[in-house]
Length: 115
Length: 418
Image (cartoon, rainbow over all chains, first blue to last red; front, side, top):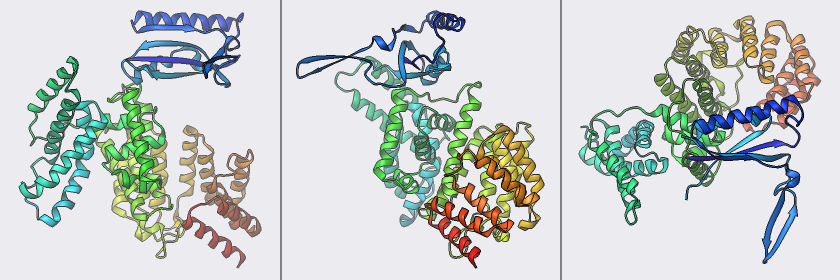
């Protein structure tokens, strides 16, 4: 079963680019991605550009309304995602706990609806 | 087979069904991997039992009979669902299910899968409310209306809570198995906290009919007994069972003839259930012998020290203080610190304990915690500060929504004025 892992953290809460901590974070992500690839459970995954680049689009009455900013103005913002094959929720929780952002942000785990 | 007298049959069958429910449903979920299908199928089987048993008698293995009948119902349901455009995989599953049922003898005891059921129902990915409801419903076999009454919510609310929980189990695929050794301690702790919450809900002299409340205590004890039988080497599970037995042994003494609240200080200790205390104590001793002390064992030990004293004055407060100190080391919460201070006030007098209480309350975190104000009021009263005590009792009164407790606090205030 596929689960989506939505990686959230408060803007600026993690290590900042240019610091050794940031380099470590990148290395940890590299290692995590390698792990899930080697285990054959990786479907996809990517980091996202900063929330300041987000645009929210709605179509109302046939008009396209595009506005600056994320859908919800919250402290924690979506920073990236994975879609991984997991045996069950316990397996997914164990994977989520290994995503490097989990130690300062949060990982939302959602089963993918198979069509 | 036992032939039942007709008017008696219904009650007997209900009792059997409740006793066997958890075991049968746990085997059914293993069989069909679906909580909803399992529950519907068992309901159907029970209805059939109500018709058949009074005529043919209770089968040698009621659980085997219920399981086999429910399995046939579950298969019928799968067959109905898969007719027309059925997928190959579903036919395959159906065939497998049928071959499983064929090898089952209705007169044999069935494998006990309740541990899997308990861990699934108490999974941390469910809300605490859902865990409690689901555990009582599926493991305990308590009906939805009964659970709703016990938790003072409407039947509809409780039914929705159960539906949502089952949907999450199916949708997110919460596993149906006993957790691996590395996850077991954490998950067992989650299970024990659900059981203890059920007990406390019943033990708190709270609103709701007393009968239902007592049922919750009994049910929590039964759940802990099941856990103890299935995981005999877990000292905290034993510790929790011991703790509940020791507390529950004082049930009759906790309320006066008029239904008022009796504190440990005023209880008639001859009303304590000595047999149950002995049972709690021997469980505690064997738990402590494992050498892995935990919060439930320590709380049970504290309760056991109280049980030893023939009257309040004979309580070994020094020992209770030592146990609270240990408990605070492994569970450093302000509630434990508060209880430790109360014990200290009886060991050494209220002076230092009051200073400790004020220190604990300084950050405002206990402002809305009613037992804090009751403890403070009590210590002030014993110190002779009746004005301060009256104020603290009034604060506690304002925080209580429980009639029996409010009555008790009002009496305390009245006694100060006299």
